[in-house]
Image (cartoon, rainbow, N blue to C red; front, side, top):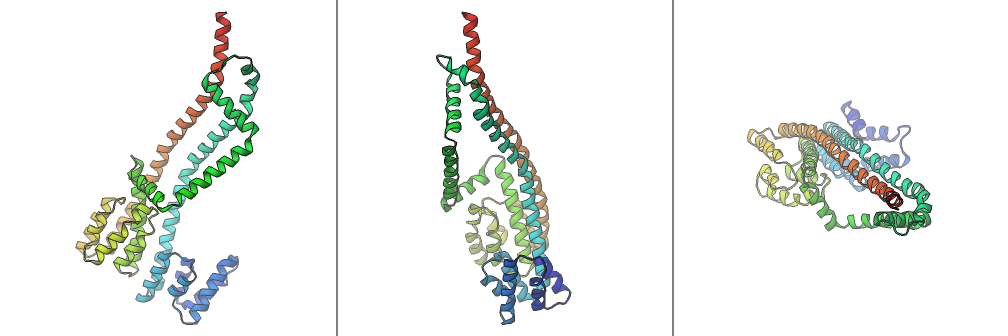
Length: 336
């Protein structure tokens, strides 16, 4: 939407005509078309684009804020071009994270599948042998109990998994719990530093786009602070905005935010002193995005051996539980 609107406006097409062209495209989702036509109807009534979009309750605050700033400065085509770049960068970073997480997720699913296969199909083959033994080692008894439960009451196991999943979702939705988890994210050994890089890159890119569109810095800080993706870090921006409004330099206010890299505040300080804050924000955004890409790769690199070790421990426990009674029976035969 941003890309098409930017291209049409830069070509000299009026805003109303541009929305008419966008909403009349072939292959567009019917619900999406309905939203564009509703915005177009408001425009024809004399309502501003940002107000029309805001009333629909489906456009991001970042987009609405930047378009409002573009309407005020008269450079809506440039603002929509900045939005295009912003969302392309966001999409690229999100896809990088998803792509990086594919292998660990596949590994985890494979681990669970192997455990279920062994416990439900392979272990019962040894049941007749185990029944002949007077006593079994504790690991074997635990494994047999799990196997019997999964084979005979698989529906209860599915219900338990579903219930635990829903409980986790409900608990995670509690603001205090979410905030505590997000706090732990940025204070974890090794991973905490990588999360900080990703959050700082996301914030720097958004702030750069907002400020370059002509939005007041205090307003831009408030909007950019809500796009970080960590409730603990986001919760500190109310104080940051208050400090900036009171006359404190932005670099000093951001230095107090726990969860962002200090290098962001140092770069902004240079921009404030040189009077080229927009240039420095663009520069730090590009630099941090490259760092975020590397941080994502490092996170996956660290997760892979951890997941392999977890798989090894689980499968190793199963192997020990199966082989230990067999080994003990052979030892008993040899002794006798």
